[in-house]
Image 1: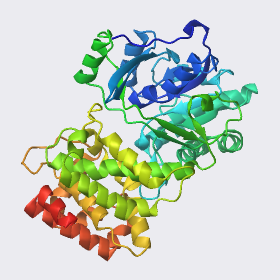
Image 2 (image 1 turned 120 degrees about the horizontal axis):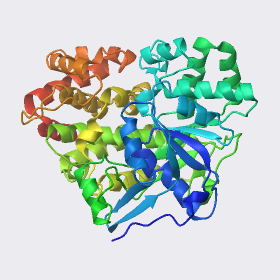
Image 3 (image 1 turned 135 degrees about the horizontal axis):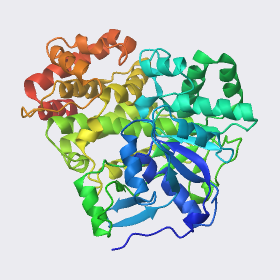
Image 4 (image 1 turned 120 degrees about the vertical axis):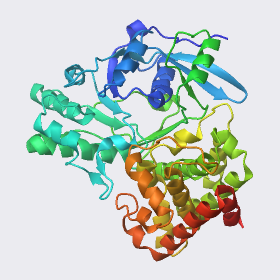
Length: 476
């Protein structure tokens, strides 16, 4: 088996995009769309300059520079794997304190888009207010030293300041992270940080910089020995960072790019004024669905997502919660039948080739639950309906954070806030309200007597009877 190589002359590409955050998702999503475009002979002035602002990004830089910035992307179709070498990125900027090289690159006139995948938790949002947090330590540090910033947003501001001084038009800032209103969130971070040190610059950015919202979707597991072994089967044994992904991908973006954009509609990207509708559908049904199956699988010592989907109690739980408590509150989406979309999601979760892990889905619940689960609870309660299944999802998360599975196997820390969550989860086994009294997670839901009673009931059931028996009781 051989990997498919780029069909274009990479030496003729010129950069138009700086992308910050070269993780697996970007390399299997945005970079693949651009590679498709370049293969059609289009958009060759939109190549990517890769960048990172965290010390671990330097390892990715070293790995990719050693292979001329080519990324191995293996699509895991049950009908057969395919492999390609994606050539859309032509350089990876130095990863350095103060981000001087990144700022200089973003100042170049030919850079018309700066895109980001810095994770859902990388936008400095105060979980209690849902707004940009100007008091976050990294933000305060950048505000005090804007010429040598440590964050991606500080670097973007420094580059925009230099472009304004040179009379160069502003670039577009395009978030590719899995966040509701990701463009608005990115705007809040950039403008909010600029306002702390240079209010006039903040006003200029707010008036001149576009921040289009976008919905992104592709399941991309973490890279480990299995993925490297797959790359070796395609003759790429020397690639330490191959990416595997499901065959499905989707990208919906607002068409708001004053400095221009590549013609991505030619390769399947949807440009729409209804991004919010697509986004809510995806976040509630897919990301919420991941949370629904993650914690029961983790507590039942199930390693892989497709194995969880083969367990009738877990799939029964997923079906009932989605159909009773999630899908009823998802608004209509253009050209989409939501029940059929859910069937597609279910099939994607069941793909054994992807071999996504339950542990990956369980990661970072303190950041994901407020975005993917709590909004559905709020909608159900606002409609005067119970949310017993979603209360059980919260109880399962709490039980998982207590640090042992039903078999007594230790669960290794799996959340940035594990040190706070673990003792709280242990306390909640006899005092469930202690878990709900996390204002950054539940807010005023902690005072919802009906939801609190359901949550307490499920915590006790999981403690006394275990996960399988509790799911059986819920399913009736």
